[in-house]
Length: 165
Image (cartoon, rainbow, N blue to C red; front, side, top):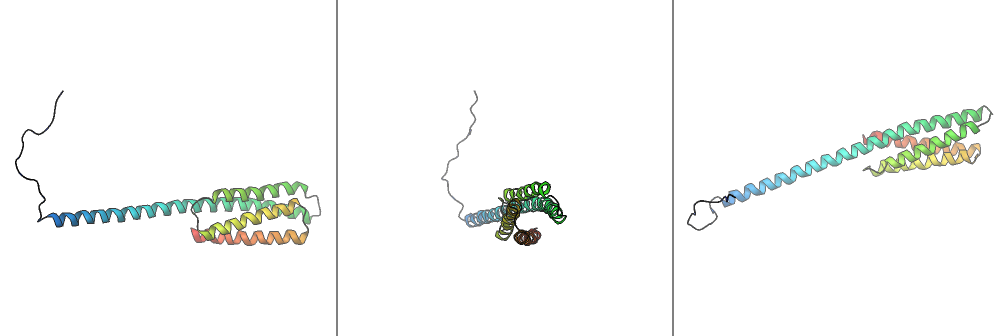
């Protein structure tokens, strides 16, 4: 076994070099300040990256799922307008609306602005309301009112998504 250590002992009294101590303290202080600033910038960049990813994720899922929902609602409306049996179009419309609301709600948990979160929540609620109106065989006025609310909520959510990117 080897022991490593000093081979000579120096006589004297330890002490700070008072001539360079102020410069050393200033250097350490500047280094700490620079480190804090760099860390702060990096954390801001990291937070911005997380926010951007969350916005892209929720807005993409919103656009894709809401298009599918609107397409299925339009199929339902077309069947209704033909005076035919709407039962084959009801289920797909209800499912697409609820799926869109569920998808957007699930992707809204990230760091989003309050405005975007509120717009997406309004869309979720409106999509579920149209699904309920279809399922309940609501009258034309009630159905159209719900669809208008869905269209308004969708327009606002698109506007907020664009503003957030």
